[in-house]
Image 1 (tube, rainbow, N blue to C red):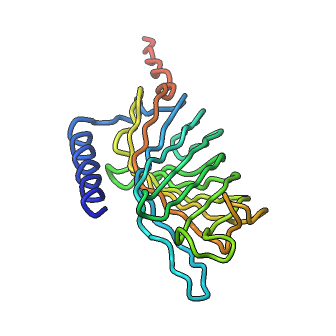
Image 2 (image 1 turned 180 degrees about the horizontal axis):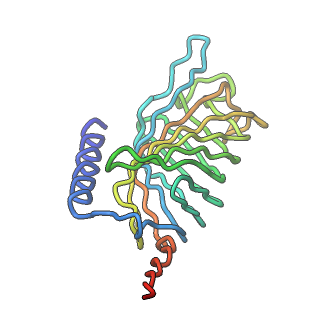
Length: 220
């Protein structure tokens, strides 16, 4: 697993360095309407413990994960995503795993720090999270999590903002704020929080440019 995490980190660093060197965004070309976007999240970290002397789940779990985003409106200081839905499946055959499925809406702010731009937002929606902390030997279930209302603080570092596509690094936390059911593939024995890290891609159109100023004609 350590080699896989190292390889992913090197790949992300290489992509970011190449994109930053090749792209020079301008405000007039910034994307205003994103038609479709994707979050690719191959890395996860979890918090939560079953207690009673039972083992904690494997904290770092790579695996296929992603989200499809439809309709993101971007203004100079804010953004709003109409809807996004995603799935993450972590672990392997030798390691207890994680399953997370969700659908939500998201809104946030665009923050500029010199030449760097960040998106800080909050998603709210419904989902189900199941984190297995041991494969067998539990009293009824070996899972943490549940189903209900999730809130998802998210941060993006925008490597590219100009239309027709955007590219960013993304990190988000998925917190089970209101558990409506303890059913998560089986009966969950406790709450858990999932953190996802990866890349963000969006495709859309540039923000409308203001009309050029009308020159004043001097009258003699």
